[in-house]
Length: 214
Image 1 (cartoon, rainbow, N blue to C red):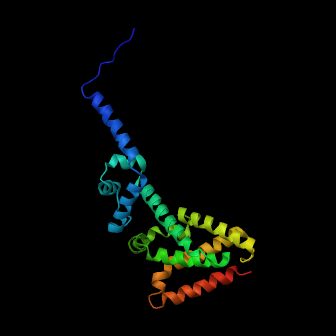
Image 2 (cartoon, one colour; image 1 turned 180 degrees about the horizontal axis):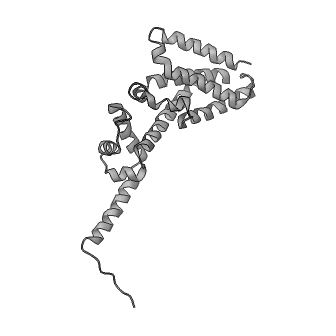
Image 3 (cartoon, one colour; image 1 turned 135 degrees about the vertical axis):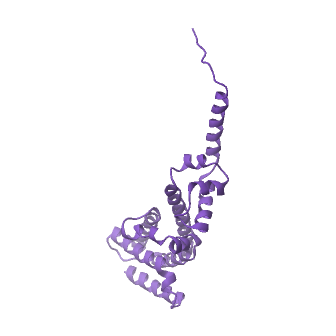
């Protein structure tokens, strides 16, 4: 015998609300949330950005954000990876038309430094929350750094093949170039406070080219 469960008033509507909330969460693209997070960081910095503020900026409920990201750190990590990896991909176009892979690497490295230094999000991070960058310099590699190493590895392998890049232990060569590019990217603005930026980047070009020349 089937026994029908007694349904309290409002129970059906509550279930319908939960379904609608899940559907709303599914419809909100990650980029909408990350765009809102970017606006918040540019306005108040990383440390003062909250999930509630991201939700208000995106004009969605806080629960929708919580269902996609467990905390503000995970949102910001996804934001940084998206922004800086995308920026480095675009900088890669600077290598188009290079006569060989070594020159392509040099052009991309210079373009990456210039793009990062001029990027509003990167500048806000260094100006407002510089202590958040320190772990990625002295403790561990972040997602953007690992992405950069993947790109560098592919380029250096191509350079070994066409003979334009000195053959060396590949992981060490990749990491060395990353560290040089990273140091210039983080320090370009203070380093050019009393020095011409074009002259410094020209010297950087010589450094990388000489390091990779067979």
